[in-house]
Length: 235
Ligand code: FPP
Image 1 (spheres, protein in one colour):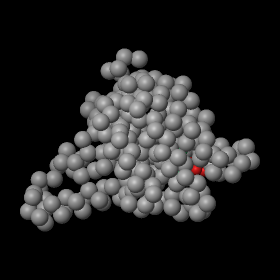
Image 2 (cartoon, helix red, strand yellow; image 1 turned 30 degrees about the vertical axis):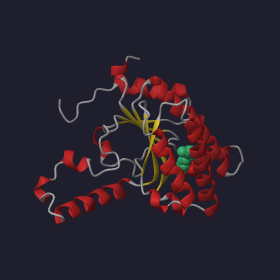
Image 3 (spheres, helix red, strand yellow; image 1 turned 180 degrees about the vertical axis):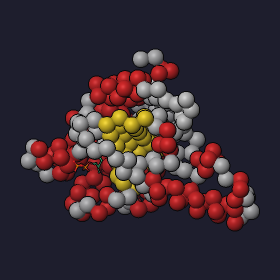
């Protein structure tokens, strides 16, 4: 596929791990482990294809309400991945960034997050945004508070706020908005993912559970994206 036809920014809601495990009469945590493995495969593939920005929804602000055992299992998977990422950065040209309120995670994980961000900062390839303890509404509120603080500090006036300027107050400041958002597992919801940024995104839904989502399915999503005409509100 010609690079110009590739979306610059792709978002993925990695849904369906629990159902994948249930179908196999296994605990949900096993589904998350399979999902984490697939996340590695798809991330590498997206980078190989030349996608510039990939944002994956790894943990939402609502996921804390899951049973403690499941939350613990997810945090362990994040830890394993981040440790592995630190070892692998020599070969991978991927820059990892985190979007969401990571201050809520245990100290050990926060330290790894900071290390991974720092170690991968010089990388010039794909930017991988890991949305962790992320919620679109919380992100917008955080931006609104930061803007209000700048007004109070005398740095700007309320009427200075434009859509472009507000972008700078978001976790994704400086990045293009997602062109394509993919949700596997059959659910057709946004679930508080990149709410501000997805205003003009194309959505592609698949009836495939995330652990079964293959590189060919990403190809298929890109094909569907290519076949759609984006008008950005014009004619
Ligand atoms: C939604 O599926 C998935 C999550 C809440 C967690 C997503 C996390 C991963 C795929 C692991 C990511 C790992 C790394 C290293 C970034 P669900 O559990 O809601 O599935 P269900 O709807 O079938 O119950």
